Length: 473
Image 1 (cartoon, one colour):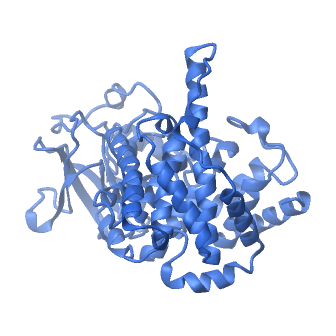
Image 2: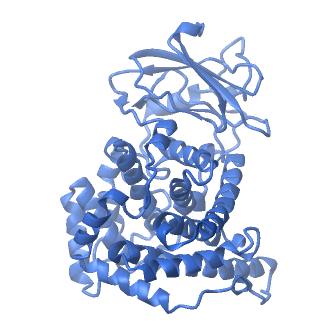
Image 3: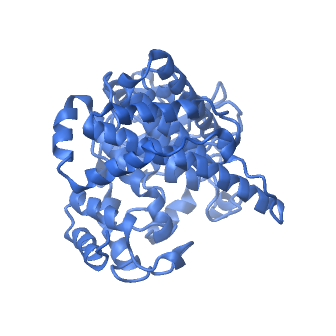
């Protein structure tokens, strides 16, 4: 992240939202402003944004603010070029469940004012920001527009139903198709686990070690479900052979019987992968199950999804500095599950709105604009799928291209080149980098995607050079 003197001054000039208090009679000094802050990077947002008269980086900006103390979150926001907030010149939204507001349109150049209140409480201080020529124009669709764009047909996730036959004819000519079908053939011969397979009965030397053993056992069973259902659904999309879809349904029906608060819930890796796997079967294999079976699988997936939604809204993930697993996979899986279950469960629309608005406001969470990744090159790979898959879903449904409006993607190739060059060990910064002796698998595939999407010759070279050095790929 790049800091300048003006950035530092601006940081000191923005007072923490006190929390939703009325304006102070006199301006605060920098010392008074920073006094409540006990950390350089607090776990949760302590001040509103944009505020302090800053010029918004994007037009429109997504407004955000601290959570406040109310257990049940319900906010009202008003935004206007009139500091008195006259009704005819003011945009207002109420009943907001999370601390984000999307204006839904490009804002006129000039000075803007906004306030927020929690429930029926008092209005906050009045916050100011500018829209200027340097405010990059973008106008992502609202969550309501995204929901309206979801088609009624299935499949939606692996392939768009009207393009299914065209996709199949093209995809089957690619060498990767054979790998998918091979994995599906393996899944056909794999014994479906039972719920008790996720129980680890050994006791560790410490309580933490025992807990880790239980988490690992839970994760293994969730991974087994995902590793079977995903290729089975993919192979069905590629070939149209009912045997793949029927096997996927059997796996999903078995998982639907498992306690969503039991052993498979211990690991959120396991929980979220089981959730997404069942949702994928609902979306892909509709013609291979009875209405009763579909309802069972969809209901089990929805139960797990709603548990995640309630947890992450309650813990205000949209304004939390970072939550690794949420951003590495759960946000992505819940986003896709919500699309799959749209029309099956009315709660799915709230899950999707939360994921979508959080993604727009925060992604790429650990990247800034210089193409780097704060957690280092090893943990970066945990985010690779999410960083492209969610933007592609948004683009395919609405036409809005998040990637082209986000400078980070254009600079991201530098992270690969400098932190993990082909044929070399990684730079060694951050966790697990000692295991990275040379780029393979994930980095090979990611560079290929990055080069194609961004038309970046350096990313394409990276992909080609790794292929030369690692023929087995």
